[in-house]
Image 1: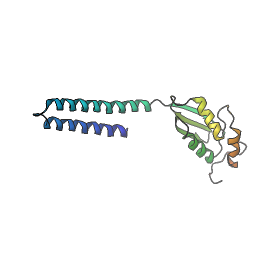
Image 2: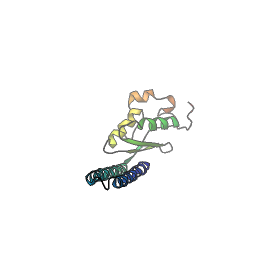
Image 3: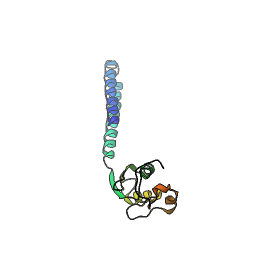
Image 4: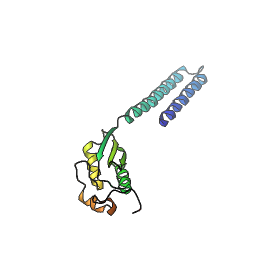
Length: 155
């Protein structure tokens, strides 16, 4: 939304510029004025068009809920941080009580299978997919599946 405000201010400044040009060249050069008006109107249309397109694009996120094998706040931090680097993933939020991570992603850039695979590559199970063995071995001892769930990050 802040970019829309900036773009509207830019459009306003362009209109003010158009008015100044109109006054300045009113007597001397109608042709110059006409060309500047066209350019300004085209610029305003472009600015408004791109802002509307970006707003429409931001609303088309998909949401996926995935059951994980996370057991502590370190797991939560790792999953949320690592998923933020995945292509197309906009956010990841893990609920430790349910062990479900809610991932919001752009379906034009990734898909459900890729999101689940990315979670396994972090070292955690993702629904019926098992964690990648190498990634799982790199997890701290407190994040292993056989550890009782706990809620402290001081390990």
